[in-house]
Amino acid sequence: MLALPLAFAMGCRLVDVDELPSPARAGADILLAPDSELIAALVPPRTTLAAVLHGHELAQQEVVSLIRTIGAHFDLRRLRAGRPYRLDRLHDGRVRQFEYEIDGDQILQVQRADEGDAFEASIVPIPKHIEVATFEGRIDRQTSSLYAAIVGGGEHVELALALAEVYSGEIDFNGDVHPGDEFRLVFEKATREDGQHAGYGPVLAAEFVNAGRRLRAVRFTDADGRAGYYDEQGRSLRRMFLKSPLKFEPRITSSFSNARRHPVLNYVRAHRGVDYGAPAGAPVVAVSSGVVVMAGWNGGAGRMVRIRHTSGYQSEYFHLSAIAPGVRVGARVSQGDTIGRVGATGLASGPHLHYGLIKNGTHVNPVTAHRNMPPGEPVAAVRLAAFEAERDRLFGRLSITTPLRAADADATDE
Ligand SMILES: [Zn+2]
Image 1 (tube, protein in one colour):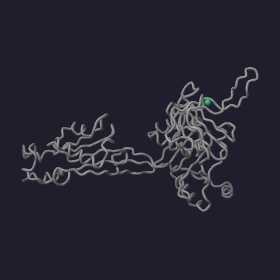
Image 2 (cartoon, rainbow, N blue to C red; image 1 turned 120 degrees about the horizontal axis):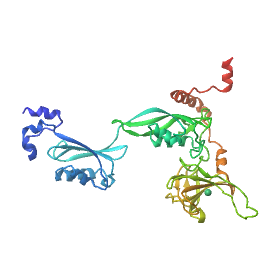
Image 3 (cartoon, protein in one colour; image 1 turned 180 degrees about the horizontal axis):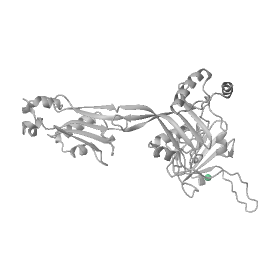
Image 4 (cartoon, helix red, strand yellow; image 1 turned 90 degrees about the vertical axis):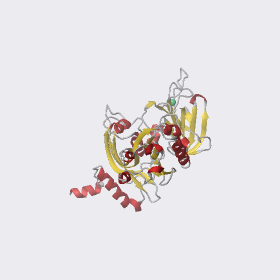
């Protein structure tokens, strides 16, 4: 049979023509024609895998066999609308291969077994290529936020969030970013073989010029195995308190004021916290690790959370639309954990976050208190040489020449 070598080349399995189901027997040229059709599509909303497969005119027995094999490896209820799938369908209505992208990391692969009508399924990781990339951006009138600068430059919002996280102890991205600010960073970026974006690894180093302050950051793993961010001298960028309990975007709409009772009007004008304009539903995070001491409805504060921290501090968050599951009195939360969502419960004219900070029983101005928080531990002396090598390597990628210490600089000038 002349056709057989060609069929081999196209990946057909070798079969006796008499074994083929009836459509294939119609003519010998079936083996010369392109033997299958490759279908690539997205899972439609509100459907089942069986319905998706039936939609491609597969033989009933094929659908039953596929569903049985897939169901043994993958929970069919986890099929998600909008996820890509590919189907390699032979012209006789049988399937050679089926693939479904479960998420950004894994793919379900189903192949026809070498013998018979059975299938074999497996879940395999999607191969990714990790590269070290750089990005430069600038804040100006058109590009007024870190988000706009990064997304406008062709990267994704996750990169803006990662950079905001690096500087969360130093810059309040809710209000401290100004036209003229500039930044650059070196980071890991994952790409799939087909060229699609597949997420980011950590930010490795960055420089942010914020209102004339030049803030540099290097990611370094200290002796205890924990990675953290340090300035160029090896001082930690992590503070006991985050700069604000919101990740991004909004601004201060009402600041702290300790005004006393008005003597004539007998009217209290004090505002014992700051209000952040923020969209309803935006995540609210714990500014520092601690234990929840209040969580629930509390009059004008609406749905609120209060957390006790070390050193006599408590933080409080008012007007929440929702409190995160697990955030109840006595629960322990870590710095950066989402504790609830912005809302307008209680005495609030619209969605915003009222954030208050209490030191030894007295409300203090959170904005200034946060600015004065002591930093975390610096790089240990024994690791300083390793830190400096890593810093210079990464800053080299950003064309930053680390300035010599003042004394050394003077010496070279002579
Ligand atoms: Zn308020």
